[in-house]
Image 1 (tube, rainbow, N blue to C red):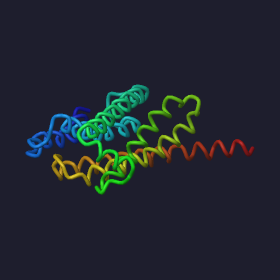
Image 2 (cartoon, one colour):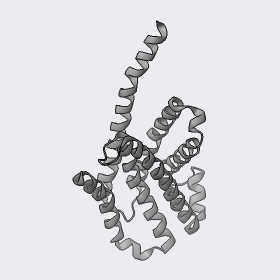
Image 3 (spheres, rainbow, N blue to C red):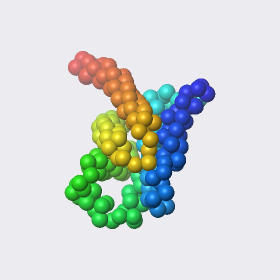
Image 4 (cartoon, one colour):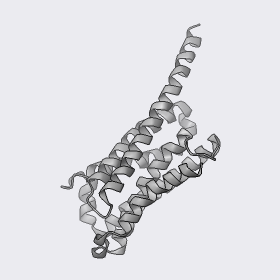
Length: 202
């Protein structure tokens, strides 16, 4: 149990710790630095989310795992807002270009698409009871399939304070965890769907 939590903490904290020692920070203002670290924290939270839903984190029941997943989702949205707001304050023209998909930087469109998908999940989460559990899960997983690769590509293309190897390792873990959990959830629900279809035909 302790080993799993320690490994998770290391996967998230080591890249952030390396970034905190980057010499590039000396040339950047406090708002820009805050925005950058908010983005790093958001990437780390993306690793936690699928692990919670998949039940891979020991010491948490299925109910508690879902509750923590909801709270982490809120923290993820807050981190993205801080990330975008900080970059807007430091360079409004660059952010306008990014939001309009007119930025010359290759990482911008991936980050913007992932951002809007995250906001969409947060908005739809407030209506999940009206949507129904089945529709909510389909929409949530579909958006997650956009958020994760978009965020990973965005993070990998940004050449900033994050150290390359530790950043790549975190991105790989985020991608692997999301793929594993989405695949397993679909595999679990397929037999249920087939059984329901069989009963309906009888």
